[in-house]
Image (cartoon, rainbow, N blue to C red; front, side):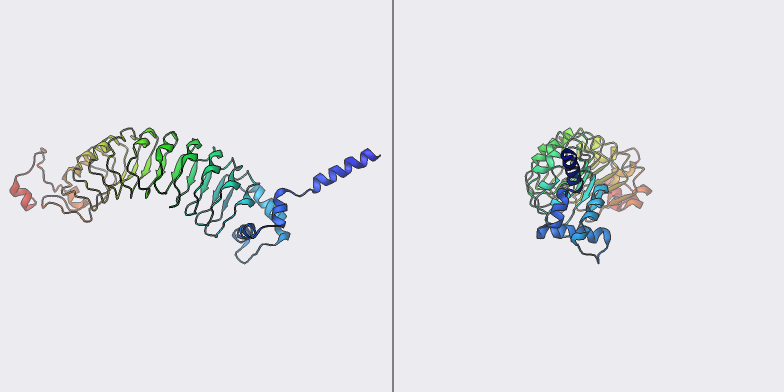
Length: 328
């Protein structure tokens, strides 16, 4: 009889034992309380405030959720999320998060957005090997070595200061990479990422891109605000549709004439003085020429380009000086 009562008592205690989340929820720290209150407001209405009696409902809600969006909530503490490895998508942009340790066990996460948070240590992310989409842009980030383990990444937005992008060279599934505003001067390690379709590396200190000859699957390329003058390697990118080269000391754009797939080109604030050679681009729908000092004979806009205005004769030879000077 005593044994039976003991079994019943143990069973009763197990059934009614509080989960770790409920223990946290019923005695939260001020920072945890703020996170819980943000959850209530986001999913039950802005007029709602957190009450301890809601803890079981919050737990039930989080257990069944696949995605959580809590951007712009001034959150600092992620510990309430650490018990819910059912989450696939977590968006926490524009908060005040510094510690990612509570995310360590969320191994089912596929999408994580942490843009504009003062994060400096990415170590907890090294365990999230199922991540496919990651946004961790912030100006305080310098060490990205923990990302080298995330070999399933397809999309990565990364804004930091003096980061070493060689840690990305084994992320062969990457299709979309944004690494602008990073003070980079060497991006040659990206040449191993042959599956890249979109690359944004604007506002860096890049001078040489000749090493990027393997990126033949690119459809979108943004290299604005760098120090690039030679773009010959771009002629290899025969799938390129959108190209942004604004604010670079580029003069020779002949390589672009070989990319018939181009739809949109930005050449504003370069030193290009003639776009005649782009007349062969039959799919071109938009071209930005703001700030260019174009020759008289050069087309000044897309309409003139399509109409055949050119510094060259139809056989490809340069027109006589008088024709070029008159723009005919």
